[in-house]
Length: 202
Image (tube, rainbow, N blue to C red):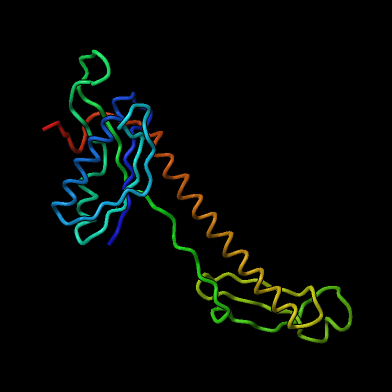
């Protein structure tokens, strides 16, 4: 199985970006020991060399789900700041499982049921007597469109298929954008105490 984990310094100070980088190294080392593959999908560098504002990871392997749970929540890197003189030693980071958006829907005409139908309302004598309109149903998604603007069945069929394809592609794009928006919201979440993990330099 595979899952995605977003680790972010949120709105924290530069030490939190330092904490992300250190926690990421600790996570990757532990994942390797447990046979979980951790791939960096996306990283956002911090202001200081070697720091990270955020990292998006894909975790793969039989133990990925259990591993993900152990690293989900508020994480704490406990160490003195390398950048300034402060008594603070706890630097908090948020780690959250995220959705990446579904795979693109493959459009195949064999998945579409085409049914001729008549249309009501104005349109002329020919339109009322002959079933030239088309009702097209995409079985995998349940989308239904009716095309009746042309007098020829074949033209309405082509219009219906094109409309279905466009609506499916638009739906895929909207789902992807919603997933991206949800991931970015993680960066704005407040990170408080009670961490699920506390890691320290060894």
